[in-house]
Amino acid sequence: MKGLRFFQSIQAKLIIIYVLLIVIAMQLIGVYFTRTLESYFKTEFINSHNTQAQLLAQYVEPYLSVNNEETKSGEARKTNADLNDVVNNLFAISNAEIQVIDANGIVLSTSMASHQAVVNQKNIQTEVTRALQGIKDNQRMFTDFDGVRKMIIAKPVGTGVKVNGAVYIIASMEEMYKPMNLINRFLITGTLMALALTAILGVMLSATITNPIKAITKQATAVAEGRFNAEVPVLGRDEIGQLGQTFNFMMGRLKEALSLNEEEKEKLASILTNMNDGLIAADDDGKVIVINRRAKQILQVNEDTTLGKQLHEVLGISRDVLRQFEFGEDPTLLLHIEHDEEERLSVKLSFTGLSNTEKGRSGTIAMLQDVTDQEKLEDSRREFVANVSHELRTPLTTIKSYVEALEDGAINDPQLAGKFISVTRNETERMIRLVTDLLQLSRLDSKQATLSKEYTNVFEMLEEVADRFSFQLEQRGIKIVIEVAPFLEEIKIDRDRIDQVLDNLVSNAIKYTSEQGHIRLGARLPEPDMLEIAVQDNGIGIPKKDLSRIFERFYRVDKARSRNMGGTGLGLSIAREIVRLHGGNVWLDSELGQGTKVTFTLPYPGDEEAAVL
Image 1 (spheres, rainbow, N blue to C red):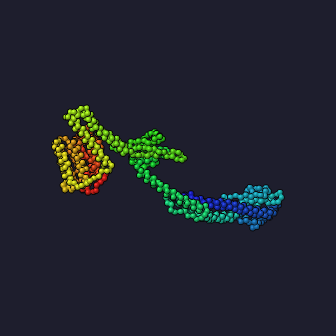
Image 2: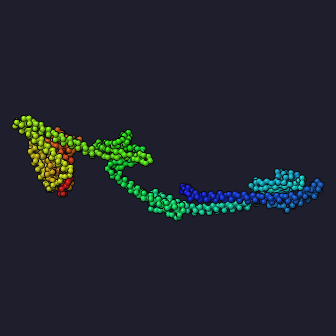
Image 3: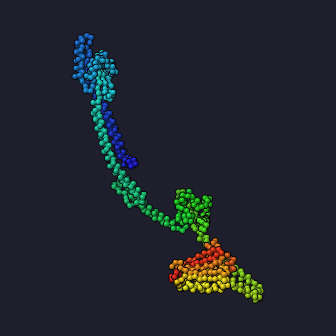
């Protein structure tokens, strides 16, 4: 693979181009030179042998012109022997065979001793036949069975019309091709040397082009990986040098732009992460591309499974509803999300379109604002106003009725007037208690209440609470028990406010405990720095469904019975705020029909400065 990548590089391509150019040039030169040289050698070879054949024909003509019939047999044999001497001595040609043939095509003499068997045999070669017919140009080149290239030349012997015979030469051309082969080897060697030199020069020359490009590529890779420190070396002022300078300039500008972009990105990410409202961004296809942490908390979704999904699926609404509010005049929607049976969120959705200069609308941003607390606050406000109105209206209606009765003449009846005035006074005191409790809660809520702490003996404080309710306890036959852990030191608290808490808890215990029941006041140290005080009764208890709301203002388990007993529904709320003001906590445990236990804690020994809620 590495070698394959090399051949795909610019340097390899440049080297290949140089080498191919040299190869093509050398091939053209070699072919031209070889063809020219071969043509020259062939021409010389043919001319030389034609000349020899022509001379031999002229020389042997007297030998063939003798009339064998008129010549004695002895003289004829002498003539043939002389002909052999002429052929073998005067006209012998290296690597060639010479035959002298009479007019009948009979071989009279041959220059090759190994071919003496052909003497007195007829030569039937086409060139011989043509020569005996008086045709002078008879030559042919061929390759023998043993792969040797040869040439045949046949010349007629005789002048004029009469042909006395022929001279037949068959010569090997290998000697002619030896220098050509040697020259070809020299040419191939030179070509290879030229190619090697061209490759070396190509590497050197191409390196001057490719090395700066590699440096730019390497730096571009470093830039892509976020490393901007190194620069491309500029080695000259040519086009590549100018490219390197431009790249360095571009890299600097890019570094600045990316730095600014990263800074803005971090700011945006920090804003999106820490903003109190949820944000979801979708592209023009409605697919979610961004979701911040608050949106994931509100919708209880995972970013990995949310990105790429349709916006209306993530929000849990239909596509039509989304488009209705997305493109409507009031692009807001109140969404109710139930995570479980106890947690139900109210979320206000606001939609804003993303615009693009080229595409126009390119996406949607959905803002998720958790308005659960606002909804609860609004519900609490409405409920509070309704409860206060109801709590005030009941005694006011009673007072009005009795005052009107007095105006109508009941004042003249002393016994009836006294009863009416007593009821009016009780209802007035009930309103005063309600207003007092409301004012106290208002001060606690507005953080205006302060604590005046003093060291208090816990056992004495609980005994005084029991003494204050002794008459009611005796009337109903309820027994109260005080249990205080031994060696309990004094605690620094706001005595009046804690007495108010204890009075409220003991009063509730007496109200909801049947006759002959019992109440326990206990104090212990579950932790070295925390005092725990509990008020426990064996009364009617509280249903489990009401336990979570028992400390809410104006909340009553049995509203009719609570009002008849004179309660305002604010006692436990005030008690909780007072305990919290001290830095403690309060909770309630109850079983229906078995009783109720209210427990609150206070810092022990509580020697810190007065606190403000």
